[in-house]
Image 1 (cartoon, rainbow, N blue to C red):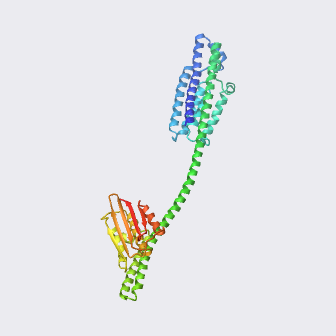
Image 2 (image 1 turned 30 degrees about the vertical axis):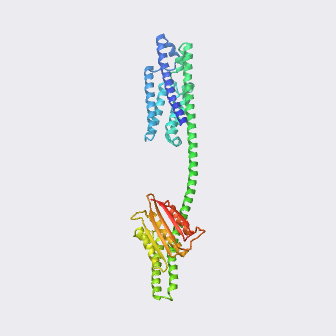
Image 3 (image 1 turned 45 degrees about the vertical axis):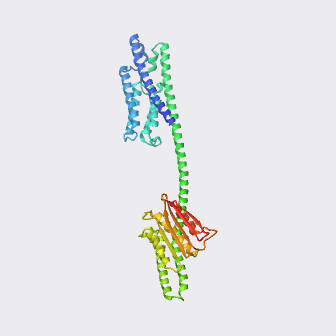
Length: 431
């Protein structure tokens, strides 16, 4: 932006210098004419001139007015770059420049640099305009104006009153001073144009470099994003596998454990009491059917069957009921949570944790009595699950216990295990 600001300032300076130089030449025509009239040097001047000049007062004021119109056109085109008549405006600027050049008797050609700078600065995409007709026309006409601005070359085609002749009419010291000021203004105009063009090129180069750097950064970001997406997809797939594994483990494990315990009971009763054995087989059949339903629902990413239409308390009771029909197994539920309304995710996590605990107590601990106690205080909910099974001195975190920890972590819960006297599980999570 600093380069653009400098270039813009140089361009404004170019506008000012051209105005001063143009009006300086027009003023010389006017002042020298007055000087000649006052000194009665008209005959001398006319002898030096190849053609009689026009009205210098008209030239002076016309030059000032036309230049004002040119500046207004430049700034209007700059402000309305998207205007569909932008090409026509540019041609109008060129026409005014040619008119000013002719009006001042071809004494000053610096305006052509102003026109070039106008195209570079105030055209939205300079790279596009080079293929436009008006750009080629402008370049040709501008080149012709620059060539014809040379007095000797211009004299071949047209006769104009030379400003140098006017200046040489003045006393030597004034003529030298006037010529020096004129040359200084021409030089300043070229310097201002060069500086404006240089700073603009630097700005465009830096802008292009910044764009290229941003594109490289975007490419790197896209690669990183692509890698992140791949990792995220892989992690999502792993999480989904774990979720499905947990669901299948919970449903199948729970059902198969109940079936295994029921079969053991049937084996004992089949020779002793066939009727009781038949009832036991009927209970096993119900457990199998419920297990099938839960497996299907788990695979469809649904909640456990018991939680579909029941409260958490009723769902836990439905979970326990099939086991109460199994001989030598008692499960006591002490539910002190009242009518609490958990989010579905929390209900599923708690239900699955209790289900896993009961399954482990029967399968691994061979427990005959299981106690479930659900309590709370002002800040936490607690679940205590204990049994009178074999316990475990060295607790090994298998799939079930690991998944229980992971599940509870999703709701900000914590779990601890104790296996020295039966097996105890304590769960805690915030209200």
